[in-house]
Image 1: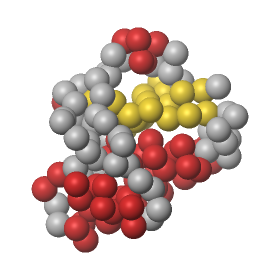
Image 2 (image 1 turned 180 degrees about the vertical axis):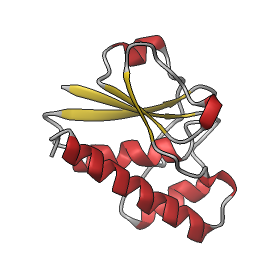
Image 3 (image 1 turned 60 degrees about the vertical axis):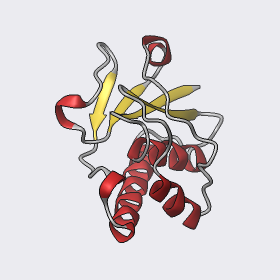
Image 4 (image 1 turned 90 degrees about the vertical axis):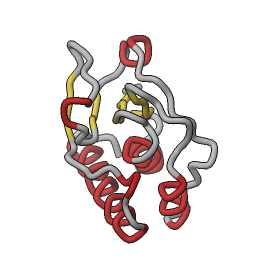
Length: 132
């Protein structure tokens, strides 16, 4: 079982969307995703909950969590979400960065675009890693 970590600073938007799409689309016998952040926020952004509900994914129980060494220890890959210098780094772990805008202060239409771009990246990752 491979573990993919999707991470950003507050773990309240992009990384939550990515992990949800990954767990929906990847073969659960091959891989799973978790999301985490370096400074977890108190909750997933309400607008993120709304746009994910629109595509049938309920993140209401999702809780931002801290990216710890223990969480990263057995991971296959760390995917960061375009958070620049604030992106987490785990020595020795294969990393990939997706330059995505933070949905936190964006209008609903823009958050939908971020959601769709996140899904596109996830689908591509699953294809490249042969995880379907």
